[in-house]
Image 1 (spheres, rainbow, N blue to C red):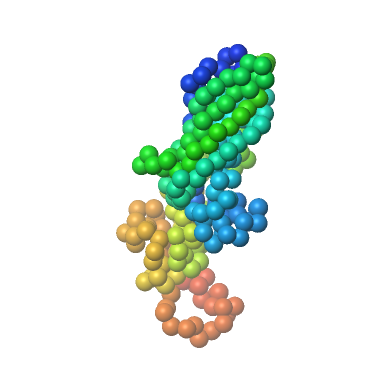
Image 2: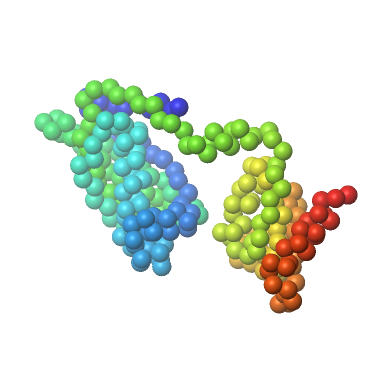
Length: 240
């Protein structure tokens, strides 16, 4: 369990800063768009009102977890987009205390998101009701983190990756192989396998991966009759 605390209104000072970094994947943006029915964002993952929502979530999560932290209540947010969200690149979100209003126990924050080059992607203004008393909360870790910890030190599992012809299809296999969770066996057409993915063929041996390249020709047998043939090729590779 993780323990997070807060700052009370009296402890907060003008100029206090909190920041975090995230790397947005195209899949993250698609998941956001699907969850909230943003068809335009699905078509253009770096444009539209949906991206303002993502920026708002990043900044308000800083409010709820770091500054002021637990017990805070976001009263309003206003986001201005200045550039497309960086996909597959680092995005830095930062909030800074601009003003304190003692009569309302309200804190006004300036928010900003920048890409890896320091270009401002979005700015924001947030009004937050700050907690008046100290609060500490226990936050459960992600279930997968515990699972990954238990897997460390175990032998990697032989895993087939079928038709890995895109970056999305390869990304999970690469991450799992680098974490020594799996030994990938790639089934696909050799010339297309890494097309557009940015992953060169020379990288796979370093990850312990093996490649089983298929024919470019249209298969003479239906897929169900090909499965035993594929299994035979894998056994031939595994057996000495």
